[in-house]
Image (cartoon, rainbow, N blue to C red; front, side, top):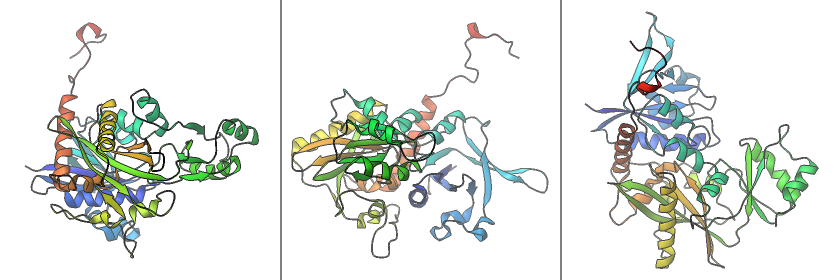
Length: 398
């Protein structure tokens, strides 16, 4: 029998729409001869929905008519070893409709999905799920903690300063502003600590500009980080995964852009019609490659070895799984390079990076590997039904 795969996407995140793109691509590319996928869309208001219309791009974001065709669901935490969603509304006989699945594929980006929260829910419910585990997801979605974890690893990292959201309002008081900026050398790069897709990232040239940008960050995130601004910056990205017990790396990409920082629309909107890329399963497709990027750029051999080595080291630091993408910043004038951030669930799962390696791995195959890894990791993590050692039992068992 085919395994039932629940693909979760959307979510209460500023990257909600990007997650829809990834979720639809996953639903389209999954090997339908082995798996039976269905969508679980988490709306921006936090409601969980499922139904046939969610397979179609034109139904996003669902309007009132589409919502009538969807079923509102909640997750049942009491079914161990599998997942079960129950309809919120009961039928005429007082029963909820049930949607049982064998494995979850989270396709979230950003807050409340990529950051370990949904992974923790799946762990609590003992549901197999694809991608990075809870701790790795949580750590790597926090740029400041990522730096702390990787410090001393030999991976080059930019220093950073953390600025917490005030208890009231979105601006720092004058006193706090002076305190937070007294040791900074401007210009600086100011960014949210937990968001991706370049949302909220800005160059700031003085304390006043920094304080003016903070409200945009604090609207979505509780923490901002400040780093030295890298002049003459070039970005190099690479993905990592496990393959038959060995850590392997993908092709390297070098996004091209005219602005100082790669912005959200440049990353996710392609072509003159501003439509995001799509994916045909089983074929090497252009999809998001219609964006301006260079795959497999010609690099100095030692330089490339370092990027691959540092990416593997970061992956190993938290017992990596899934297909995270590691992003590096390079100053092409001084030839310095730093690990910039780690994306536990990269946009479109970074499939194009795997299609561009010497022996291409197509998106369908990549998803199959992720799903099978989910079953393997779940099996390995199982503990006894009653995990209390006999000597620690304080109450009788039946």
